[in-house]
Length: 240
Image (cartoon, helix red, strand yellow):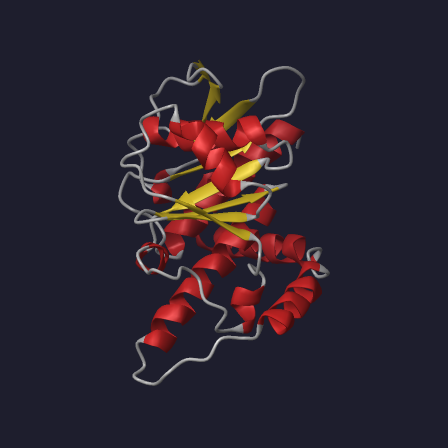
């Protein structure tokens, strides 16, 4: 399996897993992965009009930084191009970008204080989560510069009144980050809605735990392979 075949398979798998976990939003939101090669970046993204549960590796289209579809016979979500091209243009290390509209993510994106340090899972995002002010539907290419500034060198971005975004050196990395960012948001909603006051983890302990968790990044590939096995037990058509 060559590099591009693997990238197509992994990105299609990410869409299927997102549907399985209930992260999809009918036809909306989008994941992308940058293709290898010199010159101007190009990236794979979902064709607009397919449910995440339908996406196969062969369905993914290739888009350049000018918004031209250079491989495939389908259109894409224009707001998706704005968001994903912004990140791919600015972050050489962000090979994969995942954007979701999960209930928990959108709820925390509406809260004044954003993500709180309430649980060990949230500590992975201590000083590693950017915030982007809401500007309406992301159709204005001028917003790309502001998305880039908001993300900075963080591993994830909370888009105010909108949703979540994660980045990674691979699909496995970006998906792991999104999984646990969304889980941290779910924990926050459960904790703050439980009727008792919540206490945050002190900053020095949050930083310590964050550093400990970063040392376990090699485990992401183990988890990704486990997720692929889970998909294969259910339906292998994402590989087609």
